[in-house]
Image (cartoon, rainbow, N blue to C red; front, side, top):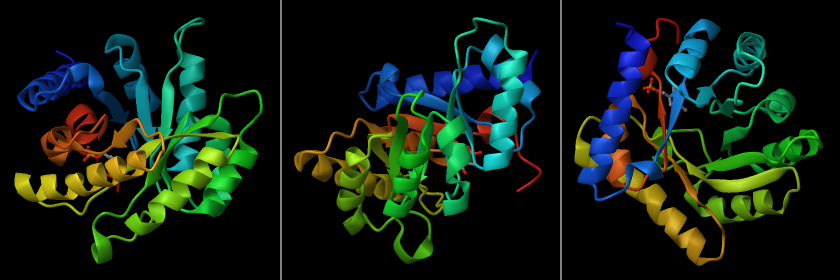
Length: 236
Ligand SMILES: *Cc1c(COP(=O)(O)O)cnc(C)c1O
């Protein structure tokens, strides 16, 4: 049996079962396969044999190389994959993200949003954007402060090259289910507040291999799963 295909089936079954336990429809949860550090051949396998459409990458150069490789590997007319950039976004890395990816989940300051919008090629649809929020306070450095999220979301919504989709968070790792839920609840409550203020946010990008169930219970609409699909990564 093929490990990646088995793992994909198991993750999908886990998402569906968890969703039902949480009183949600499994269709409301999109699975992003995080393929960082994995070769293009494994992405090909997950896509063509596993029917996986969404892939996430953390490192710009690595991701761009894989996007090009997959274009070469997939048969002509094959439905396009959706590539999500989920790693830290430095100002000097925005151009390749704007040119090559479909989504960016890690927009955490206005300057990065402005650059992505300006650099998004006019021939492509707007880049789908999640604003990354730091819901763990001092313990984490990535993401904007919750108090800054409204202004940043409004800035993204106003930029022509971007389409505001929602919020993303990477909470500090904790083991207890209730502690995981408490962190994700903060992102969900922030989304509710922002929607009440008139912002259109249909995406909550939260949940990874070790905290998938807690994220689904708190309303995640997009889970980012690497290890449970592709196995342990040896390189950081
Ligand atoms: C690596 C990574 C993931 C996937 O993590 P796993 O624990 O392997 O599922 C998800 N989101 C982000 C932002 C990541 O960097």
